[in-house]
Amino acid sequence: MIRQRTFFLIDDLLFEVEKPEITLRKIRVAQVKFENEEYKKLRRKYNEDIFHLEKFPDGWHIEKRE
Image (cartoon, rainbow, N blue to C red; front, side, top):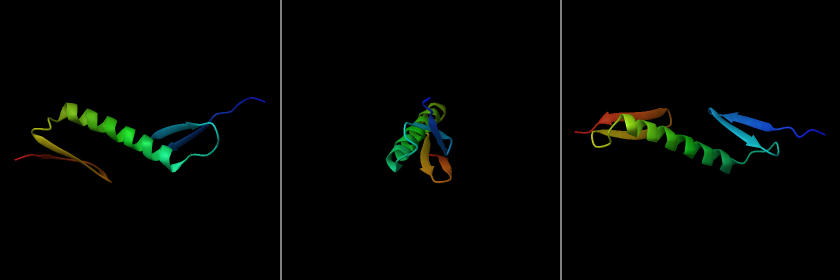
């Protein structure tokens, strides 16, 4: 019998699991990693001394500091 791979796609995140189960903890860890990567990219583009970066459920909110 050939081993088959199982993949899940949730919110543009791809998961490979050995069993056709996925835990909520794995989803949350992957989402945090993805959010951290987004934040790193935004920090390169926007200086944090000048801009305030904040994550909301609908996306990133960037505003200029006064």
